[in-house]
Length: 279
Ligand code: NAP
Image (tube, rainbow, N blue to C red):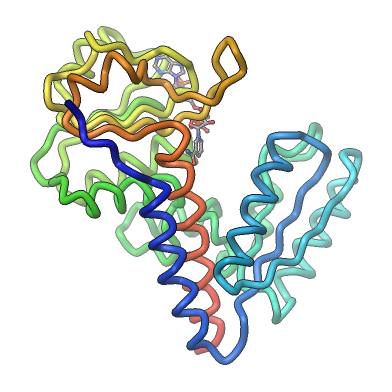
């Protein structure tokens, strides 16, 4: 029977620590949140991040732009925010509506204010073990493992997914924590054979019901990063929770697992940015 990793409670603790640290600063940290278009999921995410900021004593500056905003206008806003002394972090909510080019926009954010850790400079720093900002979702997972005293050193870790936002940085952090890491993706052969070897299985694919009990080793730690909607529109992960739960030693629920931790690490990154701007 698995122990359920309570991401919500852990995230509340992290945000509380950030709130206390913020009180020691000579000014409030600031986050600029840029939302282009009307995507309902993005609107929910942005509102969540703004509410986290309010809880942590971080000022948020919202910029809502229409979906047909010309790229040059968006880039001009990002450049202005790069220079704005009140703004410590800049978050451009992804995905951007077509034909806006996400890469160009991310590259325009000053690496000093790239609190999502998406800029190529920060990604490079992460890969050489010198990250100034933590990649929010993978760092949230690592924080969960630490909080529950789950050892990574020497363990077989299998990461499903190789995206720039989740899979790749997840594999980097697990490797840096001395895990032995295998990354799987849509071209992986004999996937279940590999997942069955995992002491720590992190799934970030984005397909409901994908991880079934026969793919999981008895006693494995199962971390479900995904946020999918099932047939009845309910939020769920990649893991078939009810059947994997009795087999795992630890498991994260969806919702209430990795999602809240991602947001809490973002708050910590804004604090880190503010501290460096105040030096
Ligand atoms: P993504 O960019 O779509 O990447 C999905 C990855 O899964 C790709 O690497 C893909 O392989 C792989 N994949 C797809 N089908 C597969 C299959 N049948 N077998 C093995 N691998 C397969 O997605 P993402 O941005 O990484 O996000 C992944 C999930 O995490 C989504 O559900 C997303 O909503 C969720 N998410 C959650 C949080 C959070 O805070 N909890 C944060 C970010 C994302 P290829 O590379 O070969 O295409």
